[in-house]
Amino acid sequence: MKENLYNYILGIADNSLILGQRLGELCGHGPNLETDIALTNISLDLLGQTRSYFQYAAKIVGDDKTEDDIAFLRNERQYKNVLLVEQPNTHFGFVIGRQFLFDVYHLLFLEKMQSSNDEILVAIAKKSIKEVSYHERFSSDWIKRLGDGTAESNKKMQEAIDGLWRYTDELFQLTEVEKVMVSEGLGVEISLFKEAYYKRVSEVLKEATINIPESKYFQKGGKEGVHSEHMGYILADLQYMQRSYPNMKW
Amino acid sequence: MIIVQPNIEKKLIQTLESVSDPEIPVLTVLDLGVIREAIEVDGVICIKLTPTYSGCPAMDVIGDDLTKAFSEIGKETKIELILAPAWTTDWISEAGKRKMEEYGIAAPLEETADKDALLGNAKIVKCTNCGSKNTHLVSQFGSTACKALFKCDDCQEPFDYFKCLK
Image (cartoon, rainbow over all chains, first blue to last red):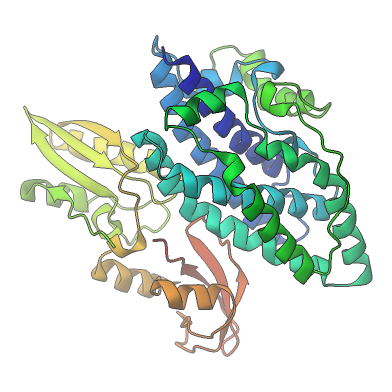
């Protein structure tokens, strides 16, 4: 089995899975109907992308492994998503801030993944990038609307960006698996677009009259499976049916 | 832009046309352009299906409906979901776009116009109810992932716009 490739795919897919799950929590709870529908549509796109990755990963393992096994039957330490995507829906500012900080990364990442040596990853990238460009447009639009809105919305947007900023550096931390995949021409060299990421993020924040945090202290761990305290609760929700009724099917 | 002609055997068209998109029932799967290949191999109908959006729940239903339609004429099917080349709204047939408009969904504009419309820079999306272009974007995401929500400022009716995807 190509273990490095398998783990590499999970790293990418878990970001989409966990963010999709977080957004799914908002179904029926969005601030208004349009936003509720938009956020759950984004969730659906992310879960669809996750399925494509997990189907591929399941094929690599063989032995009748399915996408559902990978999604539902792992323990917390085996999920490799970044800490950013597991942060809670504290208030709408946090939902938008988290989405924006991830979307900008996601878009740049998929752009690069289109030139991987692995044709399935290329196909998934080409499919997903069309969806993610809509996500990025939606979230940057809202950052501006809230940041450059009322005093109250500006305060809350600033609070969210200040709170989430510490999770951005982890996006660019290369794991051992990623290093191997990059050397084999399959993986994305994420450090190459770190500058472009902060440039784009800063441009939007500036337009939104949001101050860019000066903090140099960053959190990391998710990509190695060391998660924040929120992760267990997400999995409790996500895995409930499979844990209660093992092997159940829809 | 690459337009890849789907490989569909003529004798299968009638059955394929009987299967429609569960979300937009006026469109057949051929109008939508999601069937990339349909050929008979040793008596089995082999179909390659591509999703419009990654998470589109209609795909599973379309797969089941195709299997059912062919089983009714005594044929077994093998359906494969493919991702490349990625689906684009260019693959929706002209007849499909017309049917979509009649059904009340504004058909996708070409790429640059679409961006202008979704960014609110230009009033170019035509109301499917009264035909006025005095419309505005309510939300980039509508009732399904493939649509945006618009409202007409003349007749006041809300309507869906099928987003351009390239």
